[in-house]
Picture (cartoon, rainbow, N blue to C red):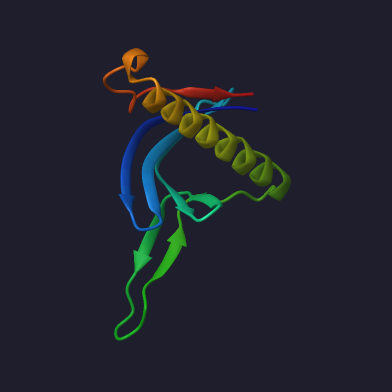
Length: 113
């Protein structure tokens, strides 16, 4: 399975690190508005969700993407997290050596096999 992270937009608000989209190959499926979170050593992401507000209660969030095949879903999530980690590592390396860093990499894609 190959995934590409693109349209990565840093947010850095609390645990919310960024918004991004992902393309899954060979199917060519594109999932928009995913969110990347980080708290301490923990990193995770969520597929797009719909907020359902309840009067006087905390909102619920309903996922807009789900998979019947849980093995496929787990493999996909692992591939996406690996691609996000690769993106983070590339960003950190560029910040250590700014002379070689491009001005903007927010639209770059990062394949993971």
